[in-house]
Length: 57
Image (cartoon, rainbow, N blue to C red; front, side, top):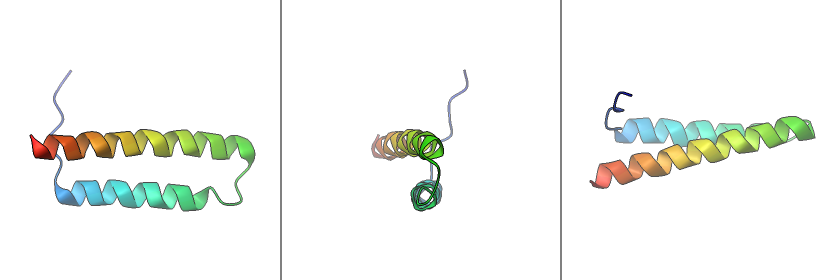
């Protein structure tokens, strides 16, 4: 497994923007699609948290 490159602030901003758009897209979606989108948003937020932690190291 290769190591991920250290994220830049621009990468983190792009990730947060993607999550925001994903959450906005949940409005009016079918319940099963909402659940899938919610899971994806949670995974992306976890990735952003990990990226922020790597900036502090």
